[in-house]
Length: 292
Image 1 (tube, one colour):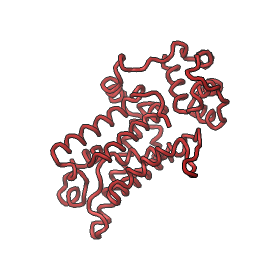
Image 2: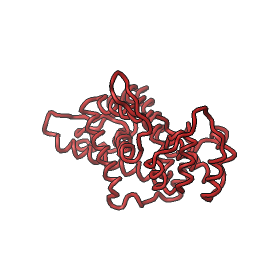
Image 3: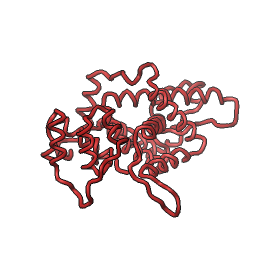
Image 4: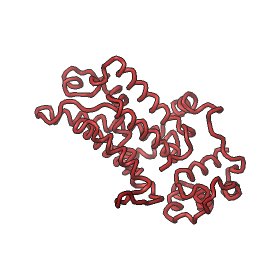
């Protein structure tokens, strides 16, 4: 399943998170301090080392966790493109904060048991919170069978998430579950969180320092132009096909999803036909058309 246009185009916040997670993981691993990243009751409550919460929320402890985690963060950049960098920043801050607080609360509750003493580090909260809109809002566009088992184009993302969730068993399972809780709270619009926005000065910082340079940003087709529905529709309709397979009428569920995101129905249908019914690619076609 494709995550849309390659690279970090229209996803500066995702790029900042990926860079921060990758750099912190490498730095702590090079210093052989990776295993000391996980938060514990002793560190946070007894010794009051609250500074450990920040690196624990971003740096992974092992190479396999880093690989799967960065892959999922990179894939989920599609949500930043859908809702915009400002609202995605709110999503990141909310889910990371809520999941971190729940992790600390679980350590307090379980401190007198032998169930677990240290939790795995890494942006589990953000990653698994992203599985909530992935499950609810991204439709299945294709299905297939392997060795008699049914799969969809979303199955491999779920398998990567399952691998990350169980990578350290209980130590990673608990942060993953709290990430799902945080994502559900955001989806339910608790405290009106989905209407909140980051101050412009902060969003401008991410756009300035983490947006891809002009030379590395893929240029949209010259025919995808315009800011009005009619112009965008004509641009998408007139844009030549990039493959040999015939265009297939898009499913109404995919059209309805794009319409719910604020796009015109005809434009959404044409973009889906251009994208071979890949809703992520169609979203990027529409966003690129509106950004010109």
